[in-house]
Image (cartoon, rainbow, N blue to C red; front, side, top):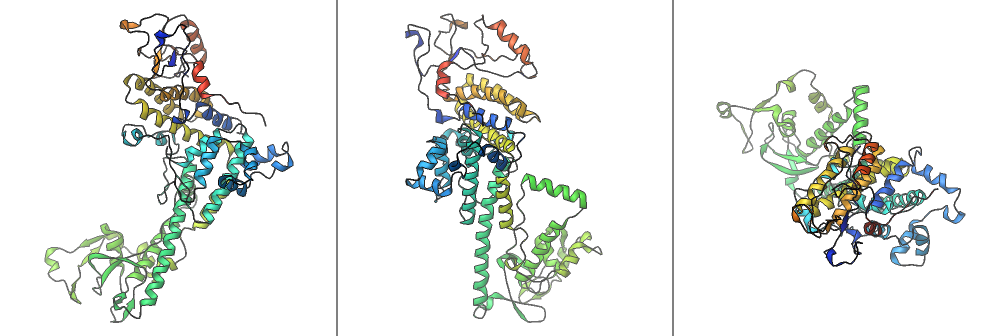
Length: 555
């Protein structure tokens, strides 16, 4: 596989006049590594999923490394120890001894424990929010949105040096997520009430479900209070009642708002939309399980349950309604209004006109499911019905899954999320630089195509190397130059000016991406003596010092 790699001849100039230097060594450069995630952090995550393929769960990973640990460390980091660090108590020593004063870990802990739910990534500049041409890497490679807490979690875990510490830290995070759920606090950096984004990784989808469940429980509590208030005012407010065909007045329950210009066909009472139960929150794993269930059993029970719930809520909010009233509101295409001539024959009930019409042919068929469910439904507001979706059960299942998540799959999701973050930041910073952007697009094409493949995990090392090129360009987009042995370049360009960039693809068309590693190595050997635009596999020494290097310690 061919891919763009580091070039020994690319250095970060940072505006330095290289002609003034007496030797050929590049001047030291101070670069803010917080601009973009480090390539070494990404590499740590790659090592994580490459070395844990045979381990079934995070619990197993912790158990496998526990025997070699001192007894005091076996209990792991308690939640109180983590909290005490934040408030500055003496127990912080336990946290520091376990994870050290790791900046990324500390940043994540502060974000997760923020009682106000404030969360912001300092590394995002205004250009990221205003540049509409930036690629949606989250969608392209199935990562997490760049401004989510998942990407910060990826940086925190990737900055740890051993698998045991990674697993232990994740175990601590899961415990904190459980506390947030029990206290009704939102996970920061995650939308509070949006359905799961199926274009993102499963970890991010599950975080979304937890926040959505918190919002739903809050809405249900409000609806319950509203219903109780209606029952208390029932004896004092005649507007809360509706007249049915027998002339009796019945209390409306669970009504949300009045539907404009619409009345019940039989009684002429205004139609109210009901407060309804919310359907299940579908993540990609739940969708897959549901599809498999339908294929095995042919069941459509979930859809019937939702329809029955809506019918019962509608009956409670609109006493005296009939099936035609429900269909007009719930499924307008199945209702046909009368013609203009027939409208002259409309009856006037209680001073309100009632439009006439007929149901569609499918609704009139004998044995129609809607008719059967309507006969079975009884007036019952949504808050009094059996829940269609149990938030507590759903979140408990997610948290249990977090505790037993596959280490390899977990690290893969973090890897893709951090990769999408870095590429997003890099593109926003580089897009205005025409020359560098051409090089970036080559790197982007390789990353996207490779990550969309089935066997992308096997090419993680190559992806990390390409990302290293991207990170280098993003660190100093206006300071990357090419140094050649000659004082001048092609077209008489001076040595310190921007030169033409090139990428080695093993001597083949870069759109094919099929050159073997041996061909690539041979090509490198044949071009080392040329002052060409080929890349070397290793980054320049100044950049290595800036990015640093981390090795995964054996367990």
